[in-house]
Image (tube, rainbow over all chains, first blue to last red; front, side, top):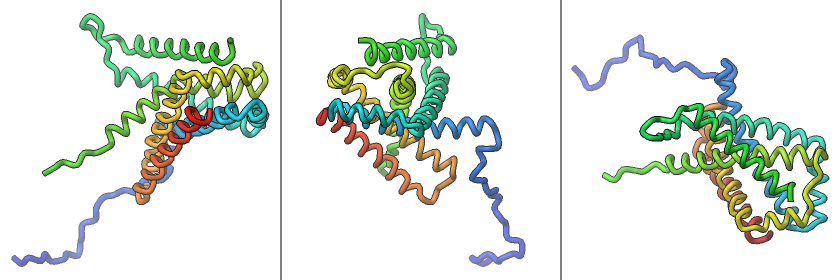
Length: 138
Length: 118
């Protein structure tokens, strides 16, 4: 026996299948996964948009007016409409996953998943109504 | 031998907190300020009213938390979108630095806009 192994003619080749960059187009569930991941881009976009609004309001009534006019331009409306769809998709998928992470026990019994999801949705609606009231209703 | 601790759990915590906060507050905010008001379906709030609302300490804190945590949420998800989705693995370190760097700079800007210049 020598320290150096002899080369054989049939060197083993590792089985490493190449994954396509577009692997997520193969199934609906994969596509849903990647769309959910992409929703984060619109979350970041809305942070920017919100900060621009805050900055405009801070600069005075003229800057606020200018922001409102800018927000009504067609391309920006299209972006925000898409942002709404993606952010709502993020919210719904996030809340539906919540029972996987939260285990609630009441009197020693585990609360059913759909009850948890339902109560989160209820809280979501209440909070949204509160936001509408704070922004519009006073 | 000291075990190297991974920062991943803390980053995941920030991601998760940002996910909850953005899911609760953003749909209605983007619907109001991005769609319904620009379309003219309801008239925009007056400048004085909105300024008063934004200057409320609770609003400032909530909006700052929303911005900072949502950016952490974006950083985490977007980094894995590039990693798993587009399978960009050779630039991993650069992507991590860029994503969390943007989140940190964005949070500082949000803090400045909400607490200093407003």
